[in-house]
Length: 85
Image (cartoon, rainbow, N blue to C red; front, side):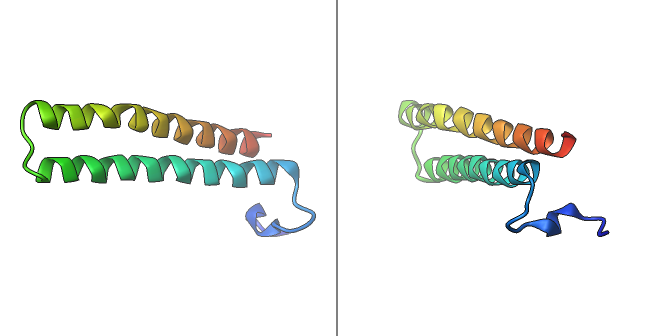
């Protein structure tokens, strides 16, 4: 019996293995959102904006950043639940 159960992906994959796979996908979506926020913030800083326009641009990124963190946390929770049970 192989030590890695992830190699069992196929038609007979268990529900918990599917939960782990979905959790990984959700986590990657959240991490992609975080990367997008970082790149966007770097672009705003490099654009030469200063003061209020820069602050306004960065303020608009906060909800997207927080949503990305939440999505990543949910994905990691799915992975944890799938691995524990």
